[in-house]
Image (cartoon, rainbow, N blue to C red; front, side):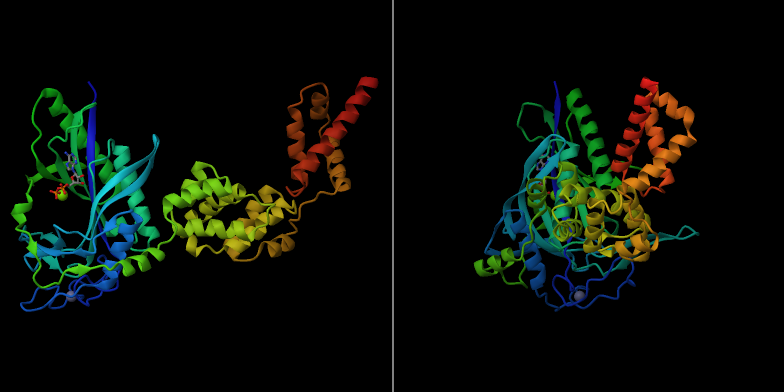
Length: 492
Ligand code: ADP
Ligand code: MG
Ligand code: ZN
């Protein structure tokens, strides 16, 4: 019998606000800021300090929830989740428990099997913890350092239903969610900085049944690779137990990035272990229907909608639509180029140039598309010249590389370097004659029926023309010349 994995993901995403969730401290870059420089009595948990909700964090959370098609609870409640850990100065985390910000959404994922809707169970607001650094000195002394810069940074937790049935689906969900957060501008998606973290809940069952078996939860997944590897391993481990008829123990596991293995951390905590209760220092959070409407109006076109439209409106291949909608800035650049160009330049041509040549140049330079030295208008202008056969395709690529390097316009480069394509038949006729005269042996082989040699002769003409002849005209003129000679050969 076949075994089927059942996977649910919990995603923690830091929100892109200027200040923290419950105080006015700035949100600073955890990887570069000096430790404990963005801390106040509220986030350091001084007695008597009171939290105040960050309105912008709520707005961003609501936007995410709306983009996921959730219903927003008009009133939601902050709750204390009690546990002790050195990176949690209050001894509890302010989170949401019984009444979260929003519930019942869906996220569309795309895999090699096609499209699927994964249900989102809930979306709630909470605060991040501080950061611990464990130190071991050369003399073997061990201690830990606490940095509270991150303590109190707004976090959005997005919990899926256990709807995923393969590692590929789990990864696709993580990718799609990160993409959505980036489209909404609420998270940079920078996983190296830990601004998105995944937790995977995994169980297995015999295919064809619909029981939810005992699961384990893997924490600390900070990259797509870690997510894939950890879930793959956990499925294998549990499948083995299921085949042997042994029980899976419900537990929390950590992912050891360095060793690439899951390690059991503790038996799974239950909700009552946290002694949740409503946060007495904060009033219920209200999101009025008017506020909801205003936030909905601010939503951009969402990634999946844009992916669909790119195929429908522009006739792009699924692959091109996928690559071009991966990021909002890329999609914007593509559309700006299409708009700036005339109908002579097809959207698929623009797509090919952007994902091929331009991405290659950006990659080499280590640049984002927003930093591209070639603007959408400048690229459109270049493609216009290729379409009009002022320069040929290959010269176009050279010109683009030069535009990228120098910031000059296509027109300037073409004029300066004399790159204009030659379509003039008389000039091309001259080059063809020169080549045929210079290669009598090849010409004869060609005339005797080895037509493939014509490609060699074509290449020689293009070379003589320094690549600037119109390939179409060259081919025509070359064929005409060969035909004439063949006639002559037949007659003679
Ligand atoms: P907790 O709050 O203890 O983490 P939840 O019931 O909120 O528990 O579930 C957390 C996550 O576990 C959700 O993403 C859910 O989809 C997933 N999940 C629940 N049951 C299973 C199961 N049997 N197998 C796999 N995932 C599961
Ligand atoms: Mg959990
Ligand atoms: Zn603070």
